[in-house]
Image 1 (cartoon, rainbow, N blue to C red):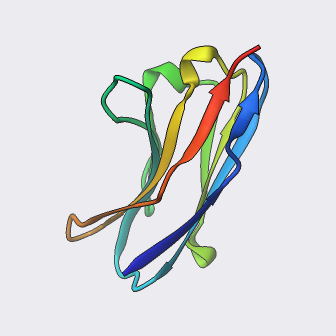
Image 2: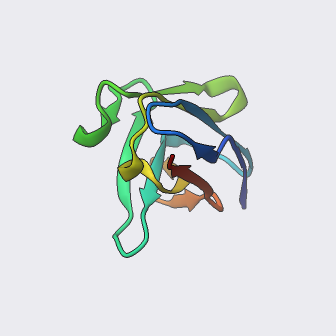
Length: 116
């Protein structure tokens, strides 16, 4: 079993910033990647950013230049710095951990609301 502690969501005005963090613990073996996905009301879950072990980070086109993902391997923690937030960034953001065997683990999600 893998447990997650997510934090950092909340309400922010357009143009503002938030920093999400996700710490994974438990039976963690052979991590392939850690990342963030989001789901807005009435829409499918979509990739925001992911950072593979020893690989190149991947960002959704909609967040490139505004969001930065980083990872602390020693702490099994992934961060998402979100700048220049827009109302369309409003969603539930969920942490993802994928193993080299293809198993996906998900955090419980944290709400981000961008509104004036």
